Amino acid sequence: MLMSIPSPSSGSFDLGPITLRMYGLMIAFGVIAAVWLMGKRFVTIGINPDHASGIAMWSVPAGIVGARLYHVITDWRRFQGNWSEAVQIWKGGLGILGGIVFGVLAAITYCKKNELDIRKVLDAVTPAIPLAQCIGRWGNYFNQELYGRPTDLPWGLEIREQKRPIEYISESNFHPTFLYESIWNLLVVFALIKISKLDKVAKGLLIGVYFSLYSIGRLWIEALRIDEASKFAGLRINLWVFMVVLITSALIVLLTTKQQPKTSTSD
Image 1: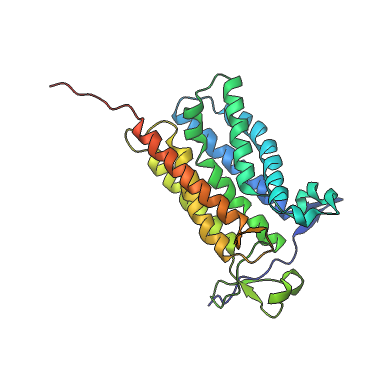
Image 2 (image 1 turned 180 degrees about the horizontal axis):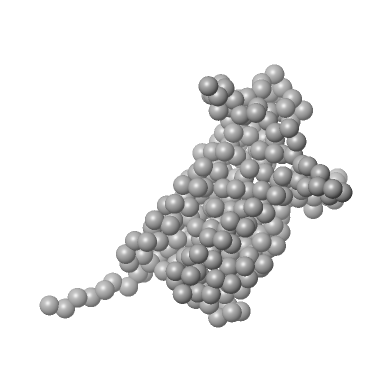
């Protein structure tokens, strides 16, 4: 019987003279999977699948910048006196919400430049976002970061002593929040694909549904996490942010659905 998830032996490995970090590799694998899914979905709606790699070329760099910027802004105290660490993304620290926003804006810019239907493209691209997150989250496992409270559950994650907060130094197993989010994101992928196949789905609806579903999962996961984070009124900043995102995206879904043209029938 599985009593815990073992900690990784290392967060990197050497390939000849090159050191490869698993954190970066997981992000790269996530991007590859996302491009593959985008291409498959583009074919089904009559868009050249080559645009999948084109969008990735715009969205990935923008997403990395946005993700790091969000992390630095929301945890700015961590970088005081040592701002050079703000660009050291290989050590971890990417705020996914900032990455998604910047990535989507870059995708919209690409669509305008190439005269593509923005809402049609976003509907095709949206399921690829949580797929990339599902895989990319495993980078946190290899970095031994962003885990939850101590737990006795059989799937508790072993954390090395040097990676534990001082107040939990005597604990060994913690909630594997990276795994929870990875599974949640995979479920979101399936939900979005299922919704996209329904009849009379409003164009542009999926991006709002994605933000709503993802926010629900993150609110639960954020409540479990114990890593140091900036707070407001006693709550982690991310909790406030995702509450706002959930409310806003739910309203967008509602408005998008109401604006869907109704088909008229004649007797």
